Image: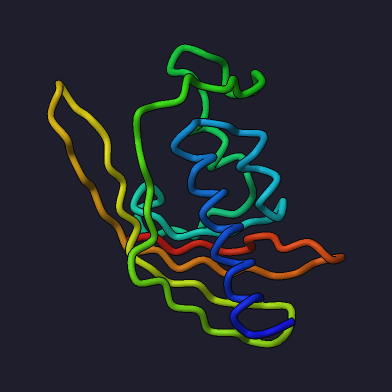
Length: 137
């Protein structure tokens, strides 16, 4: 497999994962993640969160029980883009992907864009690429 092909495979997988987030599709999102996914995000206030339960909470409806199945939310009118992605291969089965995430959406009829910086570590485990760590700021 060429370097360009393997890079594109990771970029495509990451894009699909980001689109599952803006759709609110928990099942799809979880399929991209290792069960012991770790993260540092603004919502963790500097603490390392481990496991999918932290992420699953954000796919819940505000009035649903935390242990209830995460419903698939209606598709929001949002677009997510990875600006200036950078891949650093750690070996054949591990890669660090860093980029600025741009999310475009409509708010009260006005287009809005938010941004954050993300680093995601993807690892191939048993032939499947899974994200194992996220750092978002």
